Image 1 (cartoon, rainbow, N blue to C red):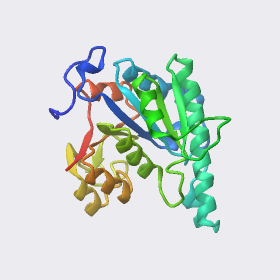
Image 2: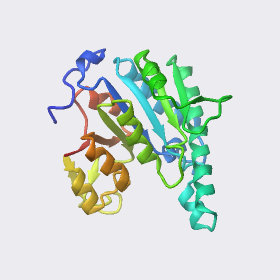
Image 3: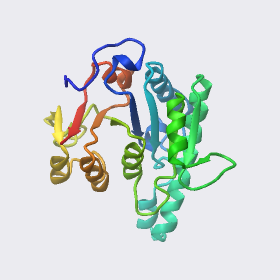
Image 4: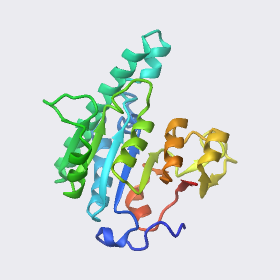
Length: 250
C-alpha cells in the first residue's frame, strides 16, 4: 500500500493524508443496469459513498460525465455539428449534477452545483473563490457543464477544476479496481498496476483519462487514484489506507 495514502480509519481529515479531493465519475455510473438516464437507487448508493468520506472531514468536489443522457462525440459521429453536440453533452452533466445534489442533500450533506455555463435559476455560476469558500465550509461542490467550452471532455474539466481548487488528488471511480495493461473484462490474464506514470498512461494508451487531462495532471504533479466505484466502502477505504487501486503519478 502506498505510504501516500492515509493511515487511520477514524473520523476526521487529520487522520488522512488528503484534506481536499475531487471525485470524477462517468455519467454511465449513475444509470445502473437500465442502460439510460438516472437510476435513483444507484445515485443514492454513490451519494452514500460520498457522505462517508465527507463525514471524515475531507473536502470533496465532484465532476460527473453526461454519457448516460447524451455524449457529444456520439452526436458528432452521427452527423451533428460538433460544437452543438458538445453543448448538449454539457447540459446533460448539469442534469446529473442536480440529481446527485438531491441525493446528497437527502442524506444531510450540503451541496452546491456550480456550472461553467451560467443558468442562475438552477445552479451557481463558476467563480473560483466562491467555490473554494464552499469547500472550506464543508459543502460538496459538483462542477457541471465541463469547462464551458466544446472540444473538452469532463476528464479535462475534472483535472482543471482539481488544480483550481488546490485538490491533492483526483479519485477516478470506475467499474474496475485500477488500471490494467489490457481490458480485464475481456482478458483474464490482464495485469493491474499498483502505480503507473503519466507518460506510461499516454504511451500505452491505458485509457485512464483522455490525453489532455493526463498531461494537465502531469504538468501540475496531481496524482490520480483509480478505484472501483462498485466496491462498497471503497472510496472511504482508500482514504483510510485500505483497498485496491492504482495510483497514476510522475
